Image (cartoon, rainbow, N blue to C red; front, side, top):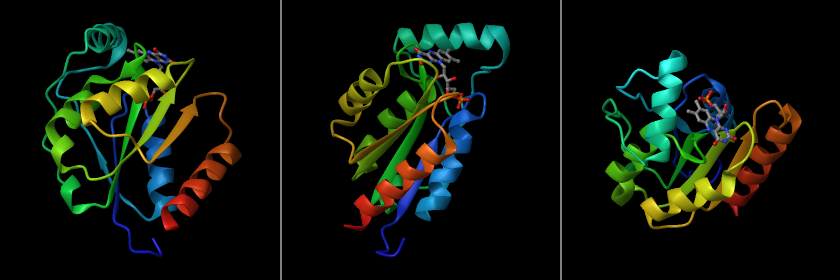
Length: 160
Ligand SMILES: Cc1cc2nc3c(=O)[nH]c(=O)nc-3n(C[C@H](O)[C@H](O)[C@H](O)COP(=O)(O)O)c2cc1C
């Protein structure tokens, strides 16, 4: 970024929606990017069911080691799909592991129907801090133009 803020976009994605938005966001902000990998198989119908159960029971999951160090960034934007009205399990684990290393946080939340305010509250509670920004993306409803507008606004906010 022009003001040399170091930004990391870190995300989990089961089916690619959050990945695509995270990539666009990172490209727009000139940020580094890292994908969180859940060690539990979340594919198919069984994966969907266990994902739902783990999410609603607020269960963490084991994740692969992350390469990027959040402590080296001025801002860490954490991307999650909504699962059972809360964050996905891999992001829950990431926040618990790295909360002390995240100076300033932003949230990226993708979803199909509703639940953003609850996810924001749940993520804030684990992190023990409020995000400087929340970008939400409703699959099948938020347009490319709306997303570009949100990214531009965030860029302006971060530069001031
Ligand atoms: C287990 C599970 C639970 C979900 N629960 C919700 C929900 O409570 N509310 C909602 O709006 N979308 C829910 N969704 C839809 C996802 O949040 C949405 O499709 C998301 O954009 C998928 O992102 P991804 O492709 O990066 O995994 C759920 C999806 C899964 C797999």
